[in-house]
Image 1 (cartoon, helix red, strand yellow):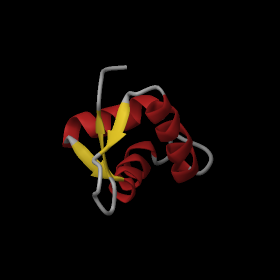
Image 2 (image 1 turned 90 degrees about the vertical axis):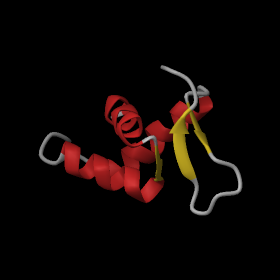
Image 3 (image 1 turned 60 degrees about the vertical axis):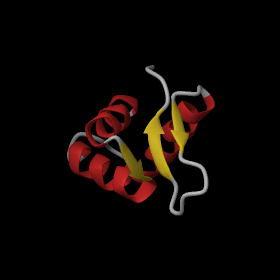
Image 4 (image 1 turned 30 degrees about the horizontal axis):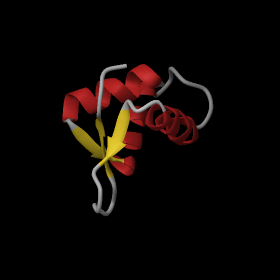
Length: 70
């Protein structure tokens, strides 16, 4: 999931959560058991806590981007 999130953000530069979840559902279809969206939220929050992902301030909906390499 972590690799898929980072790959999607590298590919598109920045994404909203909905856009990111759609990318991951398409990419991981048939390769992942469980809720892609639930795991996406959990891993995204972990990447935020580690300072790897950031959201642009004052954007609605929030747009996530890679702050530093993992």
